[in-house]
Image (tube, rainbow, N blue to C red; front, side, top):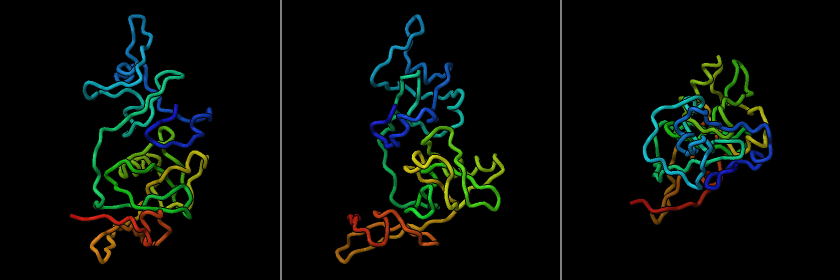
Length: 218
């Protein structure tokens, strides 16, 4: 029930309250993975490659933007493996993404990619609540905003996110705060990327002022 190529907290495996993305019985995606025989019993394969895109969604599929692990039957789980792609190191409109505790190390996120989870605050509060449809869900910045709005809340620069911290510890959450991507240049022309926020909180070490992840620019 745990992914091999992505990282999820180990508690997902043992906690009976872990919220899974369970595919609907009428789901076309489920049918492709299940590959039922004439009696309707699933004939599972270790790997399933979809022959083409599935444009029709059913149930929870219609409410999410990203799939990580889907559940087909009680003990049947499949991990989604994205096609290889390249994301640009620099992007426009960066937003601060934060762990569940404000005091932990933050970084910048690309709002056009599913790089963080959603959490909302009530008016005047700095305590956020998770809006995920399943544990570990990532979503776009605008989707995170819309979910908060639908719940009469707002995306916020929270002090902490309430919930089971053993499950939240591996996640970053969208905030409304702008974030800057800066370039640090060494005398030999090598560069490294630095993330900066207006409040100058601690950043993840590979993107802070002192990082030495130098690379060439052509």
